[in-house]
Length: 161
Image (spheres, rainbow, N blue to C red):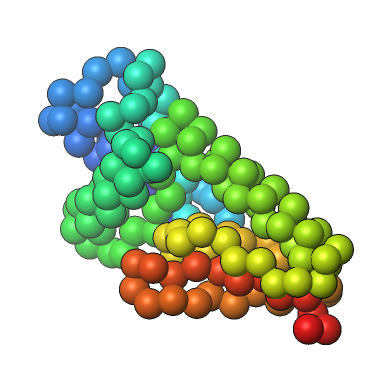
């Protein structure tokens, strides 16, 4: 993706925030290379810095997820091509990802130590993907998504269960 498109994405984001009457923000946009199961993809990382981010993040990041969907649709329409976008506000997503990875490693260590499966709480597909990816690096545990619809969760099992 070229620098012109990144600047255009930044401008679209700023315009949307202004229309929402959100003030005192700074928008940064950059290329984010994501590696999933050996494949690399290019996303645009849009980081918004705010003095009071609660409204934009929402409870458990729900507003942030919805805002990202809306922003992705607007950008795709204006650029007339699919937008692969990751949105973060004051580093919230980055911290959440690190927390999930750390929790996954700790739970996997418990599973290996006690040789007993452990189920994690219900979580979004994005959060489950982070945990699956983190634990796929390990040779001593397996992960499975279980449940239906909004009630999906991960079970971590010892490899030789």
